[in-house]
Amino acid sequence: MARFTVEKKDVFIPSPSKGAHVSGTTYYTKRKGYDLMSIHSIETRSDTVDISYIRHSNDNGKSWSEPVVFECEFEDDHGIGRRHPRGGFVDPLTDRFLTIWTEGVLPSDYPLEGMKQWKLHYSVSEDGGKTTTVNEQIIHEGDEYDAIHHLPNVTVGKNCVMMGDFGQRSLVRSDGVILVPVQSSMVGPNGEYYNPGAGYTYTDCMILFGRWQADGHISWSSSERVCGDPKRTIRGLIEPTIAELADGRLLMVMRGSNDPKGVLPGYRWYSISSDGGQTWSDASPWKYTNDELFFSPSSCSQLIPHSSGHLFWMGNICEHNPRGNGPRYPICLGEVDLKSGFLVKESVTAIDDKQEHESPHLTLSNFLVREDRENGNLLLHLARLFANDFRTDGKAEWTADALIYTITT
Image (cartoon, rainbow, N blue to C red; front, side, top):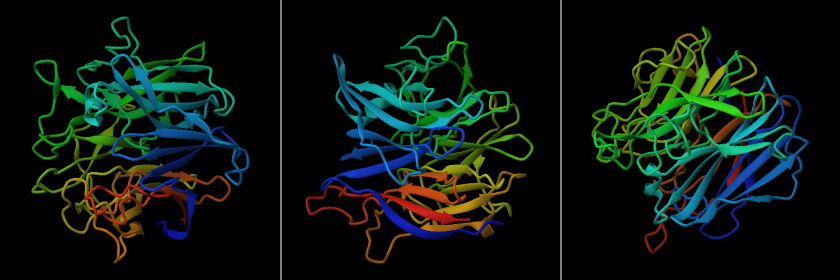
């Protein structure tokens, strides 16, 4: 069973100014070697990226190129265009580097408008992310789909599809099919955005399947939806993360919510696919291998396959029942049993936690973990947000550096 130790914690990208929160992540851009892409974003309000920057390294992050702007805001006749970069990954079979981002036009520039507007775009690079050969919207295969009606039961202006956070990492099946875990708002009987749980938002989860075409583009299709019960998880299912188990089945772990009152038990949710991700079991509360349930707030998480053959999971685990999004501490790392797909309780380790002097609003979430190819260490990208509570004017204190933790296993 794996044991985890935090060896060090460094500032990766410092906050550029008061009130600015930095999210910084890194990704290998080639099948072998130490070429990396860094993406860091500046945020000054919830669910909105002000600007992002891309850098490259050819020495495993010891040095970086000058940052290049990735435009996250653009003008449109129908409102303000917004983009949320969600990183990239290497296709191990073709050595191509793919990036994916959420994009949409918000009529009043209000984040919740995205529930009717968000769609996904992707790019392809043949040279480790330095240039792109493809840059286009993800649209389902078939003549009935276009830029507006872009996926089954998803239409711009009615509902959306998006990647909610960095932990929604893609994987590639042995047959070369790319699996991208996403979330999608739903439409009701009247064909409009539907929120049956009466929480902040409501989404289902699903998988997008990508198949390479001869011209280097990708043909896209989708799985069935993985749906929550609004009587048990008020915001449905959110921010899926996926991994393969020992027998080839796929595990999907998802964020739920007991928002707004916190009366329901707050769990992490899971589903299993036995057919490569096309169909999924009913979502159930995720648990430890001893059948014990555990509490978890409404926050992102990540399944982390490791070169050692182990499968790890990182996310927030609460001692007591959470209330909606919080508390988002401690942030924990544990091992997943590859036969059952459940979390090994004895392996769970708190990687960081609220200190005595810090705010109860501390957020240890919205993170990314990757393995360091040089030594097998896990590198956690995280910003300790809201550690200093709220300003005297009652507004959230957004100032936070992008940190990087080095964790040995």
